Structures are given as C-alpha cells and as structure tokens.
Amino acid sequence: MNLQKMFEMQKALDERIIKEKGLEGQDLLPNLILALQVELAECANEWRGFKHWSNDREPRICVIDKKGQNAKEYYKNPLLEEYVDCLHFILSIGNRIGYSNKNTKKLEGGTLRSNLDVADQVGVFSDVFEAIAMVNEDISLSRLGPKASYAILFRRFNSLGKMLGFTPEQIEAAYMDKNAVNHQRQQEGY
Image (cartoon, rainbow, N blue to C red; front, side, top):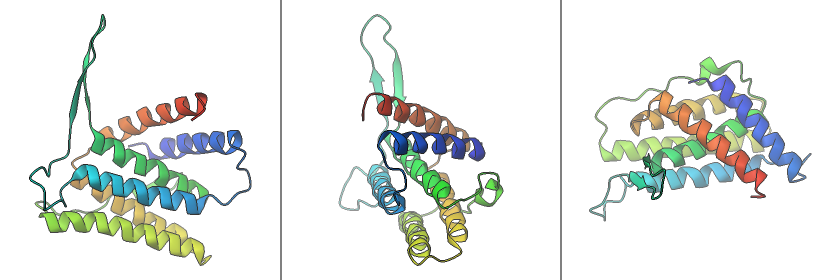
C-alpha cells in the first residue's frame, strides 16, 4: 500500500474542500476526530459481529446487476467502504497534525493473532476507539506528542483491517475509488 501517495491525495482533497467551503484558518481537527469516530461506528455496524441478539451477524456483500445495454454485475462491499471512509479521516488527521507522509514506515504493520473470537474482535474495534481518544487528548492538551499517539492509532487501524480480512491492495484500491467519488461530490456541490 502506497501510504505516501494516499497522504498526498488526501491532502489535495482536503485543501480543495477547505478552499471551496471557505474554511481557511479554522481548526477542523475536532470535526475530523468526531467524523472518524462516527465512521468507525458505521464500520462496526457493517461488521455486525457484536450483534449477539441477531441471527444475522455476517457482513453484507452486495451483488449489483445493472440492467440495460451495457449491463454488468459488480460486487459492493459496504464493510470495506466504511473502513476506507475511516482511512480518509485518519489520513486527514495525520496531515493536519503535520505527520510526515515521508515517514510512513512507522505506520505500517499492526499485530494480530489468528483465530480471534468475537470478544477479541470487539476488542480490536475498542482498541481503535481508544487510540482515537488518545490522539484527541494529545491534541486538545497541546501535548508535543500527538504524532506518537497517531502512529499507534494507525497501527491499530491496520490491525482492524487485517481482522476484517482486507488486503493492503484491496484497501488501496477502495481508497482510490472513494477519493475519486469524493472529488466528484465536491464537483457536484456536495
């Protein structure tokens, strides 16, 4: 996964949004932190594994059959889409706190033992929420080290992606697709 390129793409999208929405000079980090928390909750909701009250605890995969002359079937993975929505905000936060996109080696990895039970899987989500809170606290207390807690967040998020079964290639491809969608949305006045 080319994180440096993804940081740069996210920076370009964020700069466009800031310029077009007249947000120059505003502290957008609180918005980004809250948006990340919301997206992570949406990701957990799509995962469904924590829903012990339901018989339907598997993530959904959609097969879409477009009708018409150039009909083509394609797959939609809402769980991957929500995961990548989180990634957009994580990259935005990294750019806003000045995390060097040239130092992405510290962000790679994330350990995860195999055969996690549901409680452990829920714990992986909880670990990411906790890491978001650490970054937020470091930022709001004006600590010198939000970059250290940010790296922890990123590695925990990588572990979540592994737990969900996503490959770096799937994540990067989905990020590229969603980044293009986000630019199109801005073009259309989203």
